[in-house]
Length: 176
Image (tube, rainbow, N blue to C red; front, side):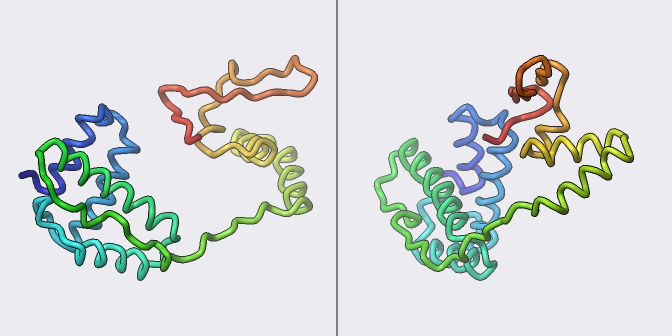
């Protein structure tokens, strides 16, 4: 019977995600938190008390309710996958949890119009690569990695309205 860390590695490999660094690091982070709370045990050895300890740890840390739920979805999926692969007929201790105690999500407000215009004017005045990047970010709502990875092919200026088309590149993954 695999230990939780081995189970997570197996899960990533078997689902064809072992090359996806972002996915694997997320899975590793969630598994590391469970292991820090309850130890690296065989998946069959985890109990409902372990699930509650994991939940309490997340809530105590002040993470949002959605994050608590997402972390449980991850650990629950690993448990189900390994239980199926190893013909384990047991109740998943990470299933049917109540996520109601997490922190409320933080609502991020946009930068007000006037300070943004001041920043954009300063970017035009300085006129260097760093300020071009800030100007692109302020006008486009792109993420930093998206803007840094732009190529000439991504930008169309010969349209009625200038257009930036973001596509996945080897040097720049897209989040959404």
